[in-house]
Length: 217
Image (tube, rainbow, N blue to C red):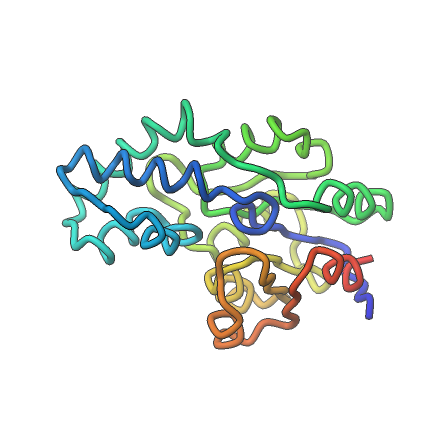
């Protein structure tokens, strides 16, 4: 059943694009720079979604200053190679085009640094569909999803926002939407499990992009 959302916020990684190859290669590059060898790259999938500093500290026990160094090395690889080791999920361009034709306002809300997110949208010819692109700052601030959502809504002059919805594949997207007080849609084709999403009480959960279309259009 369609819901009359006027403002639609999309996460990037795991929602619009599949960034697995580029993110994993960037993490391996960063870990190697610290003398850490990770033989099972699938262990790194949990890095897709949350802020990098938190993941480096939690999963590898790095002190904050070492985690920040790891992020520098990550960006060294990502900014030149990993950023384009990426692919758009099938049916996403068509969905964005159709939503735009319905005069929906599309906004990108990602924990990825804004500069990287904009380059990805430009590379895949998706930028024209978005009214505004917002992410974290390169200095490590504005990484929590609620901060990003609040920023993009206010920067776009969409406050109050009774008809806004946040779409993402990880619990952080749902938590952020709940903290701001807007609806949310968890997608299962990305990197979060159904249990992860259900634990945060999203407004909707969908398995496929076509299910998104049924709700949004």
